[in-house]
Amino acid sequence: MSLSAPALEFFAELSVHVAAPQEVGSTVHGQRRLIPILGGEARGQGWTARVLPGGADYQLIVSPRLAELDARYVLETDAGDLIYVQNRALRAAAPEVTARLLRGEPVDPAQVYFRCSPSFETASPALAWIAERLFIGSGVRRPERVEMQFFTVN
Image (tube, rainbow, N blue to C red):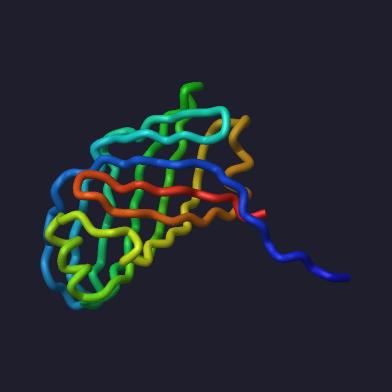
């Protein structure tokens, strides 16, 4: 029996609007910051959703090159279904590029490795399948938003 390599299928693109970071400061694990999520939009094949305000991106700046991200928020689909999203990500770049990101300056996305693994939970029977799949994605940090594309791993 031969196994086939997983394939990727487009799932959604998101634009998540964010507020100014809340800097916790240097802790025993690294520099902690929290970025409030203000809202946004999501679009998939045949569906749209809005990002509800109230979520946050919990960040740990591990080194001058590396940040570990853990964003948690809720989508409300155009059909009224709610989807809880937990999106873990790695963002890596040269120290001077990371410093510009931390200051909220625009950065060329080609200079940053930003990959994520979102997971989803919902009470919607029609969307129950999303809790039974793996997803991966890529993103870019803009000064006032984060843009991402998510793919189903088939």
